[in-house]
Length: 370
Ligand code: FAD
Ligand code: UDP
Image (cartoon, rainbow, N blue to C red):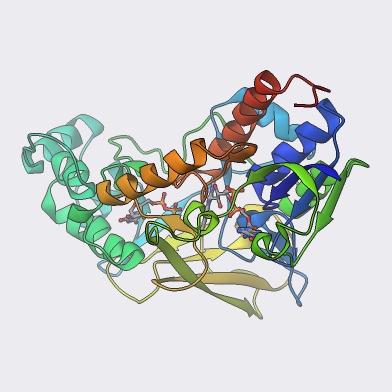
């Protein structure tokens, strides 16, 4: 008899497994339908011996010292600040749009102050910023919106930015200075020996068993357990009772090249051309010294593994109906990107898992056999 059955060995499931095993001294079984732990953050050495990410580039960044300290129990870190270039009009320019982006693209020599005025002249008045189009055109105007955001978003989501919640493109800021970092968080690091190694350490405890290639649907009635933590898709948990929640998927094309480097930075975005959205080169992220290099092309897809919840009002409404069911389901905690249908980064999922653990502690004081 397990005290807990945890579905999913990604950040949500693994952070909770460790907390429950060490702080509550309870027996945990973690299952995952994939053949590995670490969820979408899974990394591995490919045939050439290059450390790469099977599900696309994962860069850890957070402003929360608590979250950073928590993970630091399981890994050392490598300082890494991600940089992204966009291929626009045949040139490589910094993304997020900054002073250098505009000066290079338009062959100008604006100062930061002048750029503010330049943006203001082009910005469109939007009464209420609701959509992913509103966010951008109200800041930088239509031309830059079309160059940087419209095509990329249509590819990535199969939707026009005007159909997506503002939160999607609001992830990418606009700057008037020369800061060319993709993220500005206080803590920006990669796990020194990779994510998978960090997860191995997290899950290494006598109270934790891990079973891979095991689907919850197949074993839920076979494995005796008292309580469940579920980090899979919430609509699947309830047999799609109200219909399917839309998720966006990706096809990854991983290529190893017989050369030391492929591109100048970790990621190059292709907002205006190509079927893929971006190419990432892992050695920039990992700092690995290797004569060959591995890159990944991301091709957005409607079908396939669910990667991105699609932030649209009607999807949120459908999710709310499932959430109501979830709240009325005793002894099951729903956590993670798929179970709470939120476009969360890794650190936010760690934060959510730690908050869930606090709720568990309050609801079930340790040792209480309720
Ligand atoms: P997951 O990692 O998806 O884990 C859920 C696990 O549950 C999966 O392994 C799945 O196989 C398993 N599962 C589901 N259903 C079942 C079932 N029925 N039975 C058994 N197992 C099941 N975040 C960042 O902070 N920085 C980044 O740079 C970044 N880049 C990203 C790039 C891409 C291409 C994608 C898709 C995401 C990126 N993210 C990034 C987000 C990050 O991947 C997530 O925040 C994080 O992995 C979510 O963790 P999770 O545990 O909720 O979900
Ligand atoms: N985006 C864009 N052009 C870019 C980069 C991002 O239009 O060059 C939009 C796009 O809609 C994307 C969103 O901003 O889905 C968020 O970008 P981010 O890089 O955060 O996406 P993720 O890494 O989560 O896929």
